[in-house]
Length: 98
Image 1: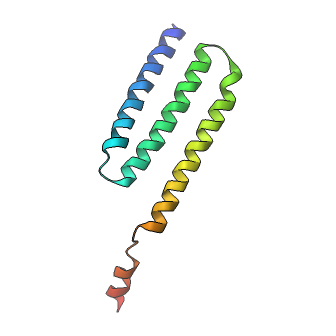
Image 2: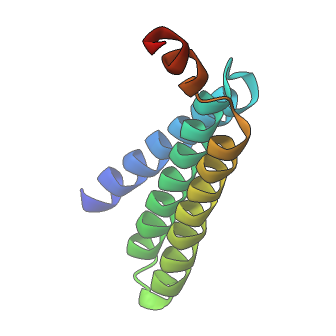
Image 3: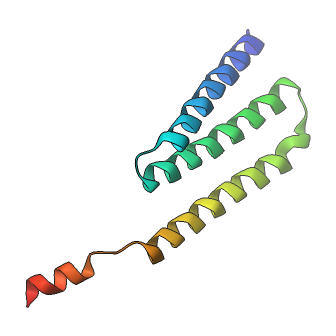
C-alpha cells in the first residue's frame, strides 16, 4: 500500500513539473517565469525525496540539499537582477508629491 501511494505521489509530482515547465515557457511576465522555476525546483526536490524513499537509500540526501540550495540561490539571483533592471515607479511617486 505504501509503495502504491509513493508511486502515485511521484506521478503527481511529474505532472506538476510538466505544468510548471509549461508556465516557465509560456509565462506572460517574468515574475510568472520566476515562480514557475521555483515550482520546478520544489517538484524536483520532491521527486528525489520520493525516489530515495522508494529505493530505500539515504544516499540522495546530499543531492536534495544541493538541488534545493541551487534553486533558492537561482531564485534570489533572478529577483535581485529584476530589482536592479526594472523601473521601480519611485519617479512617479515623487511627481505626485511636488
